[in-house]
Amino acid sequence: YNVNLPQPNIVKVSEQKLISMYYGNQTAESKVHALYDPDTDTIYLKDSFNEYDVFDKGILMHELMHYIHDMNGAVGKKFKCMAQSEAEIYPLQKKYLLEVHGVKWEYDPMYLKVISSCDKTR
Image (cartoon, rainbow, N blue to C red; front, side, top):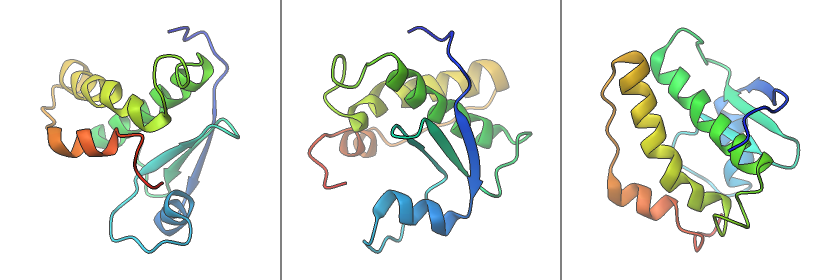
């Protein structure tokens, strides 16, 4: 991917605002740590984001990958939808956390399969 890109907008908002942005009017019990809005080239981080926290750094790296995919036109070419790119980003996030920060992070492969489907209702 071309990574020689301008810096995306990065905005901190409340978790409630993130949930509202992600789910719309639907009620949700899950947490939303961050999201990328391709319409505005903006990464929204939870207002409690800590730039020194390793987990938070992994979250930012994850959203930056969505931005890189968007700027490179990967959604529509390589991926049918933005959700499908999760299948590439989660393993990269895991690798980043381990190789850069020495933190072993695991995720449920079945969960990844579900969230990386273009057939979900979001």
